[in-house]
Amino acid sequence: MGEAKRRKRAAGPSVQNFRVPRGKLAITIKVGDEGASTVMIDADMVADIVRTIDQTAGRPPYDEVVHGLAATFVKCKQDGTDLRSVGLGAIWTAFYHPELGAAMREAVSRELRDQGKAHIIWRLSKGGFVFALADKFADVDAVLAEAPKDIPSTIGRTRSEGDPKPN
Image (cartoon, rainbow, N blue to C red; front, side, top):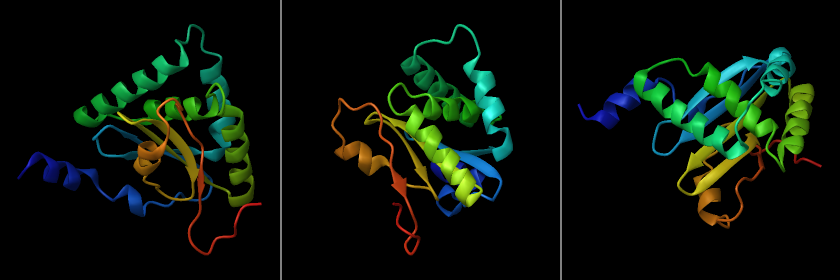
């Protein structure tokens, strides 16, 4: 069996079919050509976890954190080790992006309050870095392909057909 087929079988359920259960914050991470994985935490723990990470002294510059998390994600996927710490770090990068973090924190807070759950997509590739709040997996590679190369991040919102349009 080829390596790609082995990985696909080992990966379990497809991230495209994943739906976040109520009471959870999920982050689906994809780096390069490595398969995507989703990490979930209890929604009522989000504020405490982010506050703890934020108070950590000696944090490197934002871009180094993003690329360090990406490298750790790939290594964990290849080694089959736990991805929870990578997921927590990725949530922090979405919440504390230098220009867009406040908007993401507000959007996730609103989603948790209104829907009881939230899902962040986090993607780093040669095309760039994208994070988005979505109700299900969103393939953001098209966003990266169309985005100007000097924009490091973008926030978007996707909804399933038939869902009410945001105001």
